[in-house]
Image 1 (cartoon, rainbow, N blue to C red):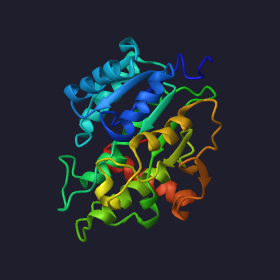
Image 2 (cartoon, helix red, strand yellow):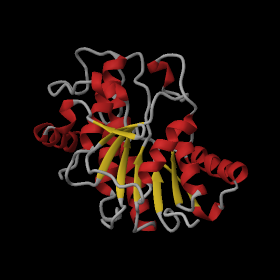
Image 3 (cartoon, rainbow, N blue to C red):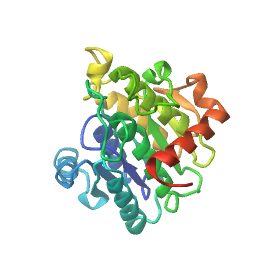
Length: 268
């Protein structure tokens, strides 16, 4: 049966392991051209090579791209490269994420590291990819969030959590911000909690998780133009559910945009 993904171009961030890798595999197997993002060129290329070797994916439909999200300049370079080489991008999967470290850590850009990697980098990337992201039906942004966004709060007066730091609160704040961002009317976007899976983030949740392939299934489904989405919606695995109340407040969305524009050094 012809796949609704053939001829489509999808960028998956954090595609070198876990849910990102498995999502990239599913999309490539179904005929999409997949831009695989990794932290370094070596990691991204290794993931592409692994897909060719183990999943029998046609290497011509894979493109390895690199950017370390702890440097916003690298995010900008990544966005410019994508716009230049793939002027039509159907889907962007904002999946790259790190667990907040035990100790408070700031990036060279001056942001708390998990807030930058999990949210600000994706905010910047999405905005810079706007010229390429298609407005055709089926074009969309899928933010991979977490059930922990419900426990989060955005510390407006101290988003970098300099005064009081807890890794769990920092991580939850980054995931809440990503979920709020999906409700931004400027983009056609949804967010999805893929469930607790066996990935590098598992220690934040406990000891047991489903295989990453299971989580990836829920992400890949939302990438398919055949799956109708409600703009700004939040999905818990395959069910559409209400996110944390803050995620749908117009005021919060506007306030977060202002804060993010300031922190990434861009004015919308």
